[in-house]
Amino acid sequence: MKIAFFSIKKPINLILIIFCFTNLSFSQNKFTIENKKQSDKINFKLINNLIIIPVEVNGVNLSFLLDTGVSKPIIFNFLNVSDTLKIKDTETIFLRGLGNGESVEALKSKNNIFKIGDAIKLSQDLYAVYDSNLNFAPRLGFPVHGIIGFDLFKDLIVEINYSKKILKLTTPEAYTYKKCKKCERLNLEFYNNKPYINAQVIMNREMIPIKLLIDSGGSDALWLFEDDSLGIRSSNKFFYDFLGHGLSGSVYGKRSKVRNLLLKSFMLDKVNVSFPDSTYILHARKHKNRNGSLSGNILKRFNVIFDYRRAIITLTKNRYFNEKFQYNKSGIELSHDGYRLVREKDGASQNKDDKYGNSQNQGTKIIIDTKYKLSLKPAYVVVELRKDSPAEKAGLLIGDVILSINNKDTYQFKLQELIHKFYEDSGKRIKLKVERHGIILTVDFKLEDVFQ
Image 1 (cartoon, rainbow, N blue to C red):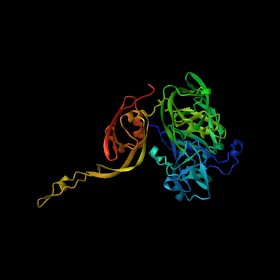
Image 2: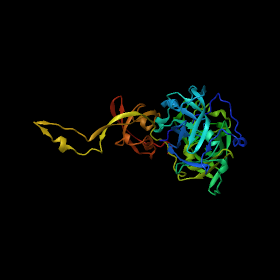
Image 3: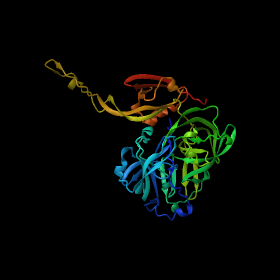
Image 4: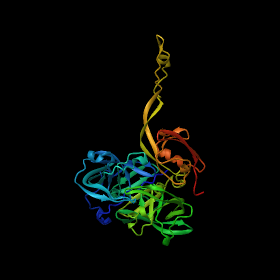
């Protein structure tokens, strides 16, 4: 299952920074690469179509989401990392993002040192958010301390090799473009420091030109904003679903398919598309010409070069290009929710029955079982449940803790491995053992494909 994860958008009370390519090279306040090659490679984790990179902030090693849809770096303070980071020079501001909740209070901090591989910036602004509910790590099964985007992309050429999971950063002056017969280069447009491209979509038997935000911080494939005047509307085959969680709350809307998405000569078939309800995306629609977003489930099908100075993006197909667009056929959204004690066999123990189990002392038999141990294992809980989905019809409830799936203990799986079980073919039988208020129950259902 691909959990929709949304980038945090630009604060409503910040002054728009005019993006000027001609002046970027003269800025002293920027990321520079501290080696002779003026280039560096960083390994990243690809989790649910999202890029997680190691970032050192004020000497502390953290994990950040690489998000083209965010302006300034944001740190989530659910682990009180700002105390360790010694954040200083702060002022209180309010941030606004996706969802229909309230703005979130944050501290704006100046003069922070950021280091990504050999790329370093000595005076970086950041926002520290103190809302304990803004912790996206449980949905990913991996700690994410913050988000970084524009400030890195504007200073360096950023190459993302999704196939090898390598991020390459290069000083623009040291970068040389190679001839590429099998790639496509598209022009970038910028609004509020965020990149947009022009594409085409074939839906409802029409070819429609669209302008899309490039949002590497979203795990979905394609978002479209419904607009009858442009012919952008869902087909008759759709279901209403949880689409993800943004800075200002959860987002809901329709999930469906479009026949094709065209990025110049590249054509993707039967693409997953989400149509978020307008009440959750008021902030995202401030750019009147924007028709939606292009996110991680499409971006990962290419190896990508971002060149903000020249305002171009280069796409080259990779091994994921022809991968079928799947979606969650169970209706279950899971989250990591702490740990539970589990009794399991101790592989390090040997059979010691002869020494202990069969010992007799004046008629008293002492048996010490060393084959088992108690361990803390991750607990996976149902946090969203789609109405009329196979799981809901089978009796599953929000709050149920999933103990096993098809007779295998869930603690043997990473969260994303478990979630992908719900993306398998229609008709696949799913048997869950769950704990509900201390009672063990069994839930049985089959995956259903709405679009067949």
